[in-house]
Length: 147
Image (cartoon, rainbow, N blue to C red; front, side, top):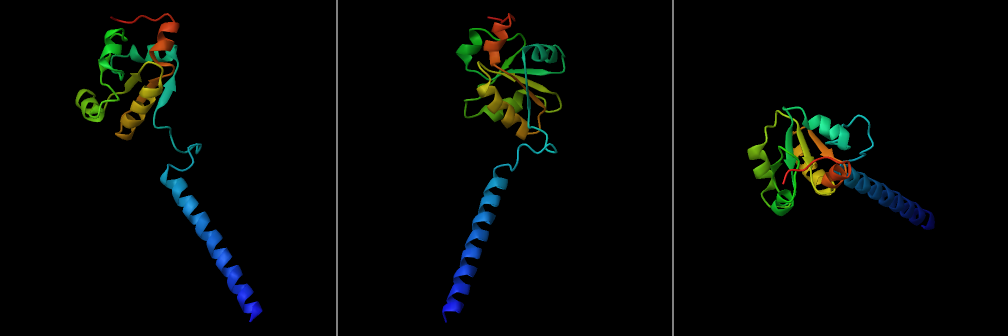
């Protein structure tokens, strides 16, 4: 009787461990799995000021400022369209003004909001490049803003 009880306890423990591993794997995969997998392309890329400037010199590239209106009014990169990423209708407005067949370059103040916007746009199939450091890095590099 004792031997049978020990076997059942071992079986239950083994099943519990297998269940924990399965649940952990399912959660990991539902959150995008291993982002370090070299076979999966990143949803967007982030580049420095010089590369960003070279990119937006191409007339095919759509330039998107994702800050708020007052930030845009205080200075923006020439040719930028404004769509506030914090607006509840960000995707609707962005999809209305952007051509999904053309690449998009996004920026904000520091790069955080634009990274979020880049991710949202990439999820909709856009090819997106984010400015590392945002407009602060742009200004630090001595680049001009339009007021």
